[in-house]
Length: 116
Length: 114
Image (cartoon, rainbow over the protein chains, first blue to last red):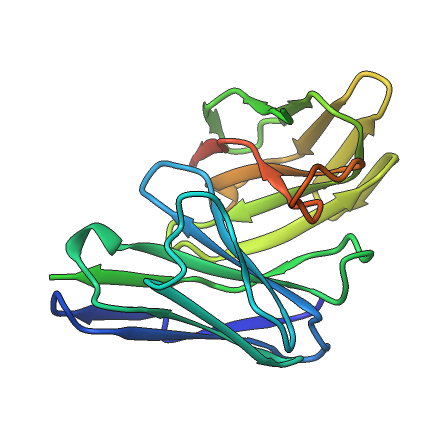
């Protein structure tokens, strides 16, 4: 199946710093990418949907100024956690689809963020 | 509101046992996914179903659209099957502001003992 990569896989940062997470679709062009957050023992929660070349659509309760999403190309989306706080510590997962009418969705391996 | 319920929440089995994980949902869907998440966190897509049955190795997934129910079966289970199994559905209808996002179940933690 198609491959989605994320980088870094783990990051530890100090409170107040910004962290950028990259998501790449390696062997297909992803019109749509999704960013999820997962807290321990909980299921994935959608944070935002990003379409290449346009602004991301954020889910209710997700601060767009805190979680900056850029989908600059059909193979790359980035999530930047700005001014990170300990409560932002979580597992962040990206996912990609070829287009909105294509049901299959591929998941990245996730990024474990720890904010000290 | 689209709800996805999985059962059981936790399942412990002996190696070699036949395992069934169930998923029920409340709205019409265009596709149902079964995902596997290992302790490291990475998610692997096992199946995508819109009808009938699919088989891959020791894994079998079935779906009954009329009953809004799907099952994931593992035959001859092995300790390496230990993981969280997640059911996710894509609704048919688009609500305002929605882009037919996946709705996830809470997952089933499977532990297979040697």
